[in-house]
Each structure stands twice: as structure tokens, then as C-alpha cells.
Amino acid sequence: MRWLILLVVILFLSNLLSAQDFAKNFNLYELGKKDMAVGYLWSSIIPGGGLFYCERFGPGLSLLGGEIAFYFLASKHYVFLVLVKLFEFYLVTEAIDDYNEDLRKRLNLAIDFKNNYQGLKLSYTF
Image (tube, rainbow, N blue to C red):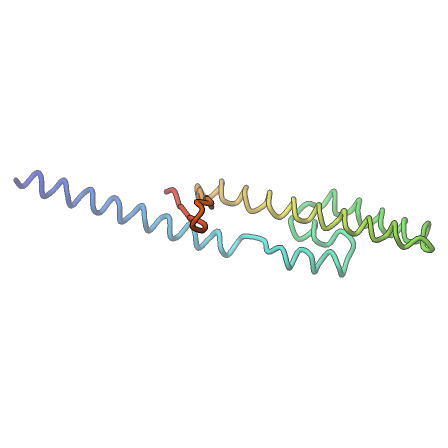
């Protein structure tokens, strides 16, 4: 009987510790994840700024140089500048999604949203 009680206590404590690790990792994820609105804001202010925000410096520098050069070469054709900016917003969206996914993997968090006809179901794995 004592062994059974000891086993139950050990199992309870191990589940409690894993839940605490999950909570700690989830808080680290919430602090470290990148926000779409901030990425779009940086892209609106500085060409390539959203990619700099996502720590993608190579594509950010190429967009910065390309957009500045394109501005001087095609300053009368604003449609092309708008298309380049829309493409930059697409790149920022992909970069932020990739950054947040990599952060979840580094912290061993699996967060799934599943549509089950009654709404979204949020599930965590730890």
C-alpha cells in the first residue's frame, strides 16, 4: 500500500513539474514571439524594416536597396511601388510566421488550432 501511495505521489509531482515547464516555456514564447502589426508598421516606415524586425537581414537589405533604387528609377509609376510594397508585406507575413514557428520548436511547444464545426479547439502538447 505504501508503494502505491508513493507511486501516486511521484506521478502527481512529475505531472506538476511538466505543467510548470510548459507554463514557463509558454511565457517565454509569449515574450519572444513577433507581432504581425509591429512587422507591418516597421515595413511601412522603413523599406525592409519588417524583415529586419524578424531578424532576416539579407532580404531586408535587398528590399531596402531595391525599393530605394526603384523609387528613383520609376518615381512616376507609383503602381509598381505599391506592388513592391504589397510583396514586402507578404514577405513580412511569411517571415513572422516562420520566426514564431521556429520559436515554438525551440521551446518544445506544440500549439494546434483545430476547427471542429463548433468553433476552434486549442490544444497544447507538453
